[in-house]
Every structure is written in structure tokens, then in C-alpha cells.
Length: 435
Image (tube, rainbow, N blue to C red):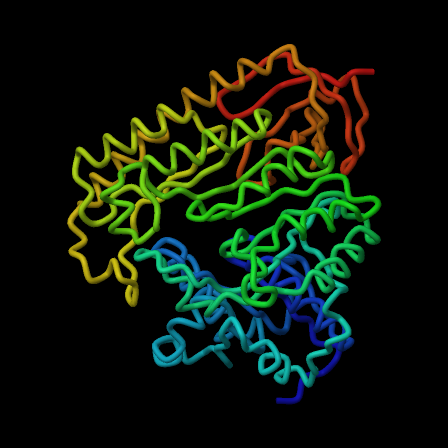
């Protein structure tokens, strides 16, 4: 295909933060090949669209398909010339998608970037690996430290779409982080399918604590936070490093998935409820300031009322600072797909609502305890009425915000301020800057 350099390419990203990083790498490669490439711009009238899809659960898959179809219609009407699809959905269902949506000019998987670039007469340039164009707010970025996953979780299709665990070297991650900081990034979110597994494949042992120490030494990096830790075999050294390093946020995203030992066994999580309770206690004993975020699944096959009650009591007992719930999605190719999907959708949704209602009350109580206290806050955005920021205990997009009325202050996005909390809602704090 002959692609003129003046043709405008728009990348549309769906799904998680890991997909954002993939789109940023694609954007960097296209720009590095002198292409007019953009990310999710509504004002450019693109000639070519690349949709980076998610295939994690039913809702995400449907969103991806709907998005592809909407651009396929634009191609039919002549609004765009070419349409390409990449990412997890394309990796998993390429043959079906090619048959069902022939308007797409090419489907590419999660490991097919060099092949995708050939459509634009662009070559994959290794020298761009450490120099990434970010698409988030300029003061924060995601740092993907590995790809794929070796865990056997029965409900998860990630290994099907992303392959085996593959760590990046510490040297490459330091280079990437230094370039991000040089370009104005003050906060990085360390992400992976399983961040605690980092280094086992290339160093022969878990190296996340060492990586965090090395990143912490980078001048100009104000905040580092850790996402997507795995509880089984959790290296507690991470929590000690977090406690002892000022610029590593006292924040841990550790998806626990359930609070019933029987369901955890069906999920092949390699841990019991009792060991999970003990792990949470150990983490909080080592670092009492830590904010723990977790994710749970409601309605996994075999989840009876007793199992759900155990999960409810698990949340009640551990009082997580942040919590999200998914309803179970019956995914082809996973071990759980061999079970009968025996929890009705209405019951899954009911259980989801019960857990979230409980968490809402917990969050309100925890937020009330912050009233009168002062926190270092990073400003993410603002409008004519308010500024919106975050403490070290909150990650962008998914966690609480600190709302600061704009009438008395002029604040700069991407800067830190000391903010005293004056009031609280269930998922947000309201405060004023300490002058």
C-alpha cells in the first residue's frame, strides 16, 4: 500500500493503561517515521484510523466491536480511506473479525507492530524504544515493565492475548523513565499483567524492589506508584522500599479477586482467604500509611450465597482504601469456561451492587477521617469552578480526587500544592490550598 506522508493517521485506544502504552509506542514509531500521527483527535478529519482494541471481558469486547463498526461505516461513506485494527481483540479473534468485518484493511495482534508499520512504509526503529510520546496529561505516564503473564488464573484470557511473561531490562526502563522525566513527567505508574513477577524470566529472581529503588534515584521524578501486584508469593520487600523511599507512593494496586477460599481455588489463584488476610495485615504492619486498592469478581461459576457472603465479610473486615468489582465474564479458552456459568446475570449484578454499596460506606468513613489533615496534592486539571487533583493515595482515572474551589486560587496543572481537607464525600475530598 502506498501511503502519502501528508495523510493523517488517528489512533483510537480502548481498554486499560497497558493499551495506552502500546498506542503511545505506535504513535512514537509513526512520528519517528515522519508520519502525521495523532491520538484520539476529533478535530483532524483523519485519512486513516487505527483502533487499538481490548478483548478482556464481554463489555470491553463489545465496545471494541462497536468502535470498529462505526469506523467501518465511515470508510464506506468515504469519510476515511483506510481502517486498521490492532490490540487484544484482534490478537484473539483475528480470523472471525476478518470474516465479519471485511471493510477493515488489516487486523494485527499485540505482537505485530512491525507488520502494522509496513502499511505506512514505516520501519520499526529500535532507537525510539526509550523515547515515548505520551498521550496522558503531560505530568504523568504509565511505565510498562513487562508484557504477558505466566499465572494460571482460570478466568483470565490475558495469556491468550498477550503471551508469556517477558520483562524489560532495568537499563531500558531507566532510559525510558529518564526520557519521560526530561519531557516533564513527574509521576509514573508502574504497570504489568503481574508486576511482582518482574525479573524472574531474565534475572532468575524477582527484581521489582531493585527496579523501584533504581527508578527512585532518578532526579526529578516526584511520584512512583505500583499497579497490578499478585498476592501469591508476594515479595514484602516491595512494601519496605515503598515505606523508605519518599518518592514512591504509599499505594498498592493488588487485585485479590475474591474472599472465599473455595472460589479462589476454582480461580486457580494459589492462595487462600486466610493467607490473603495475613498478607494484608503484614503489608499494613510494615507500612501503616499505605493505601490498598483491590479488584474483585462477582458471580464466578460455583459462587453460592455462602461464598459471596465470605467475600462481603472479607471486604468488611479489611476495609480497603479503594475497590472495584467486575461481574464474571465467561471467556472462551479459559479454564473457567469449562465450568457452567451458573450465576444468573441479574444475581451477578445484585452482588456487584452489594459490594460497591459496602465499599461506598467504607470510603465515606475513611474520607471523613481525612478532614482537617493536610496532603501533598498533584493538580491534574481545572475548570472555571474547580481544580481537580490527587494525593499519593490515588491513581488517575480510577481513584478519588481532591476538589479545590477555583475562586480563591490560581493553580498550575502538573504542580504540587499542600491542601487541607475541609470536607469529604464518599469518593472525593474537598480542600483548600495552604498559602
